Image 1 (cartoon, helix red, strand yellow):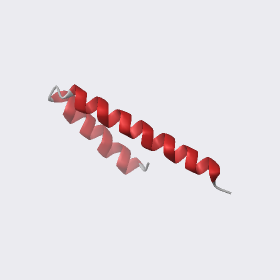
Image 2 (cartoon, rainbow, N blue to C red):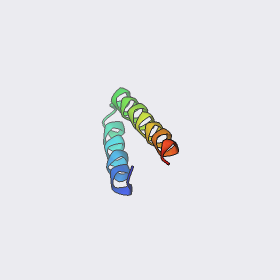
Image 3 (cartoon, one colour):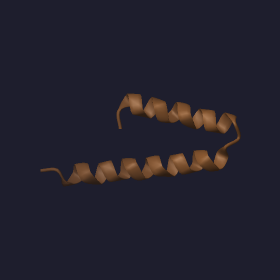
Image 4 (cartoon, one colour):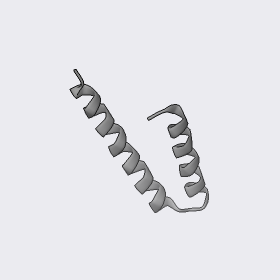
Length: 47
């Protein structure tokens, strides 16, 4: 995940939290964690 993508993600989470949309923020966080974990696993398989 690039710095730009991370900033967009954090801004989105902040907006969700500011509007008390906590369940959606939790879903976004969980999806981001899965995406990062998948990227780390893919990187470890590279030659």
